[in-house]
Length: 139
Image 1 (cartoon, one colour):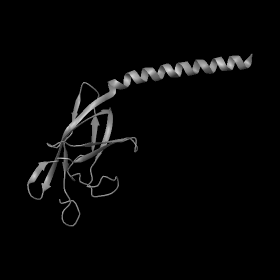
Image 2 (cartoon, rainbow, N blue to C red; image 1 turned 60 degrees about the horizontal axis):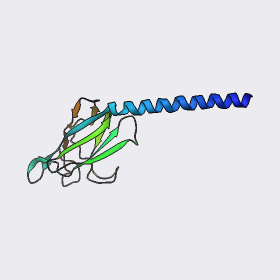
Image 3 (cartoon, helix red, strand yellow; image 1 turned 180 degrees about the vertical axis):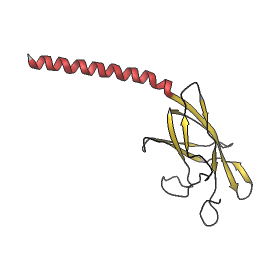
Image 4 (cartoon, one colour; image 1 turned 90 degrees about the vertical axis):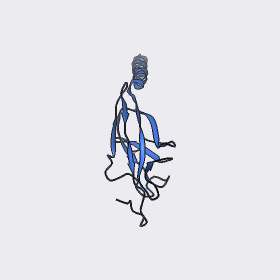
């Protein structure tokens, strides 16, 4: 008898938890915001200031080191993502391997962006600086 009551109690907990998950899944779509902008190379050695055509940007959620998404900029240096509401760090290097290469984010560039929930659109332009001949980011 005790075993039956215990199993019934566990089943009730499981049902409530599953119902809560469905409610949370329904709400998540209301927390996905649009992030868009343009990457600009500030110091192209031949042309000066140019769009960041093909630049690869990574947005890493501030409170989750493993929560990251990358995007490649189009011919005009523009990008667009849909992300969960929150704060993200922008990363860009001249290597596809994270942790390698030179940091291309301009020293004057904000490194964090706060993505707003709908109906807001967050615009975040990213200034990039190519490494100079010594391999360091030209100031």
